[in-house]
Length: 256
Image 1: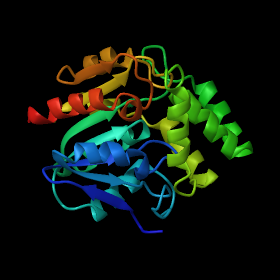
Image 2 (image 1 turned 180 degrees about the vertical axis):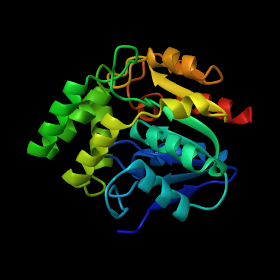
Image 3 (image 1 turned 45 degrees about the vertical axis):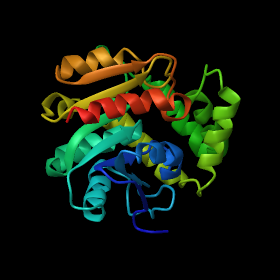
Image 4 (image 1 turned 90 degrees about the horizontal axis):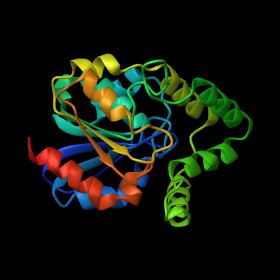
């Protein structure tokens, strides 16, 4: 295990990819190599995930300080998928000089639903955490299935996700539960509202974890935010709708 494992591909504008809950940088590899035809792409394993060592409790400030210490001291474009979007927003808050632009992929600055905000049901998330503590492996596989529910290539995507997850040791149950607590408690809507950098949100039209109506809510928070929808995509458009996602990312970055 290394303090913070990274993989870098290509040359050009620096772009950092941050994975989601229970995953690691390997989930990006083929997608990152496509982006590397135009950009310098760095994929990072979050602490306690993949080949990165666990360094204390999994909290946003601690994670971001470690990223700032160990990644090159340059301003980069940042793309965060799901939980990774929370990390990217916190990076923009704590280290604005290190963030050129923000891209949120199937991510919600406030994952829990309330009266005026679209998100996940808190009771369902609590039940998921309970199941995780009882049977980590089965719960992870169920979570993977939710990410690709309704996709025509379900079996192929399920196989690809499972292979990617098992390419590295699974994070400890402690780390997974800490990250779930982060998802439950974090509210980064003020960061989105105050952000004065270019920001893109890409949502899947049939995502079962991040509702597509989030785009409108995000634009109300920050009218400068660009929201786009990949109509038939679920929670992993970098696997199911790779070229469409690449087109959205390159179109966003080439404007800057």
